[in-house]
Amino acid sequence: MVLETIVNFAQGIVNGIPEPYRSLFVILMYTLFIVFYAVFIWKFYKFLSSKDILQLNLDQYNHSGHPILEKILAVVLYTIEYMVILPFLVLFWFAILSMFLLVLSSAEDVQQILMIAAAIIAAIRITAYIAEDLSKDVAKILPFTVLAMFILDADLFNSEQILNRILQIPSLFTHILMFVVFIFVVEFILRMVYLIAQFFSSEEERVEEG
Image (cartoon, rainbow, N blue to C red):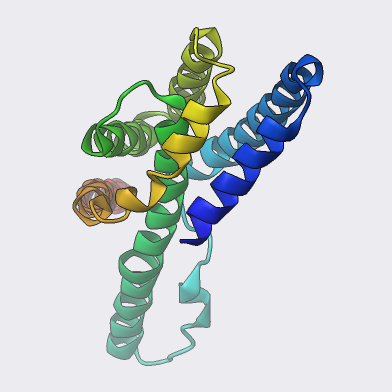
């Protein structure tokens, strides 16, 4: 297995460093890890905390002059945007967050790690439709709280334990589908409710103008 080879190689490097300098090397590795995690959370919250998570606007390619055909094409393009592209984006962010949580969390059960990651992403998406500022706070505070707990843990510098947890990453992907579907269903319901609300609000505006 490639991942196991990489982990064994990394463990060999750590063990090969003289004891007086091993702590410095481990500190350097954890510093780089924290920086990488912080950058990920920064990108993560900016992306997921937006109500309109996709900015593709595929409808701009709908140039049909026929009213009925135009509406049909609009529905098709919207479906592609939110039913095809969105699940892949959710899968990407969910997988990366789950891998980080697996390394950082004290939980041993992979199923529990996935539940936590799914709950975080679902909470971010729900609050995005309530208030985007609230969603940004949730997207930052929860992952950074996990990081803080990891840093304060007594086993922070146990490199062997961290490398062993990295070896569990492949097991995440055997349980991931159900949780991705859950997140997608939540997003779909939120989007439908939002569109219905937008439709009725626009209808009310038309009645008031008339």
